[in-house]
Length: 307
Image (cartoon, rainbow, N blue to C red; front, side):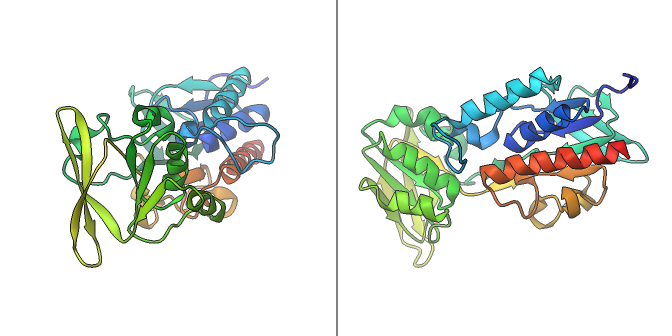
């Protein structure tokens, strides 16, 4: 029998797909696991997707369905869920983790799966109109713009998948892109086939426009010739990249851009601390990779703890 003085052998930071997979598999392998997730948005950005693709399984299901199933399975296996953030990790002789309630934890291993936060546009009107016509969740808010025109800003996977959701209900989706689409080929093919999707290339949003009723449009600037124009829409959905959630880690763990450097077995410069998913430099960005990294990290820490 193991002594129960330390209820957290493995601390998992983040409840996205990577973190949930890591917590689930570590618990299956007999570890005492605590999962920290402060936003309550289990599954991360995938929870906003109404139809998950990329998994070779039968049937259709949403990202939220997938996340809830993983969360329920983790709970059944005894994973403790803390609705708290992590404020500091001290990689001393004994690992120490401080959470937002100022409680100290001393796990034997830490799996960082804190993901990334969608990057802000940083333009006038953004703060004022967030939640008042500006959204980062098409599944949540697309219905408010049924049979109306909307703007999606960005050209990566997130922007294109959100545009595909909006194209089902909106009259027109206008994609504002600084550069050619960077999305996966199948996403790009799907969006190109939608007759109600238009593109404005080489362009960025310079201001979100609105009044007391909410968003009324966006001011655009062509990055090649500086030409300024305005588009009138009631809804704007920006997806212009992300910023890794790593402010609780020592700078020595981070690569350029603030992402976590990892080596063999997803380990950081401290073998007791692993990083997986969108917070990790070199992460590929698909569902299968997120879940497989969670499994690999769980197996790695279990081998480490056994030895």
